[in-house]
Amino acid sequence: MNKAIEIAKNIASSNKVAVLTGAGISTESGIPDFRGPGGLWQRFDPGLLSADKLINDPRNFYKKGMEVLGQIKKVKGAQPNKAHHVLAELQDEKEIDWIITQNIDGLHAKAGSTKVIEVHGNLDKGYCIVCGKKYDFTYIMDLVKKGSIPPRCDCGGVLRPDVVLFGDLLGTAYERAASEVRKSNLLLIIGSSLEVAPVNHLPDLSHKFIIINREPTVFDPDALLVWHQKAGTALLQVYEHIKKIKMG
Image (cartoon, rainbow, N blue to C red; front, side, top):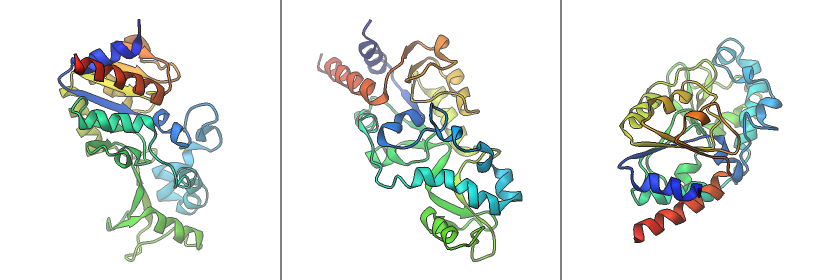
């Protein structure tokens, strides 16, 4: 069975396709993975990026935890790869609907996708935990580099990155994502280990789902189809077959 053809057929025959992406789609752009072999959580303690650490020990959160986010943000030259671009094309051609992403790198939007739900936030911005005033993430990092630890808002409140930390609630973004998955005929999962709750509940909300991921996941046995392949390689092949199907 040619998996690219089968996936293309399922996408083409579905009225509404939702897409869920994880870190595996961005590693081809040079963005570090968190959980894969050699990932960030093998080099850093995940507890450094917890809401509890931010509230109760902001100094260490900014001295140590921000180094983890800095590993991602320092890839300022990161550009969308072929997987991001294929999804943007498929969205533009109405073959897929909403893209739900666990990633905080903003590469889907950079590739041209307009319907993106960032369930874990975006590393471009930050905000004050007291008054809610928005700040650029680079401004916050500059304050930290200058020794303002923790960095503070004009009102005196502590500034934080606008990403979901361990212990945070996902809130409205996740509810929107769940709603879109329920309304879809197919959920296409790309580059996600499906280990992080509550996002890993989304496959259970779908009518059927397909997984494209380099490593096996615990959801593989329940998937309509599984392809252990790099995101870019797989999506380029799928896209070519969708074009052939549309041409008749």
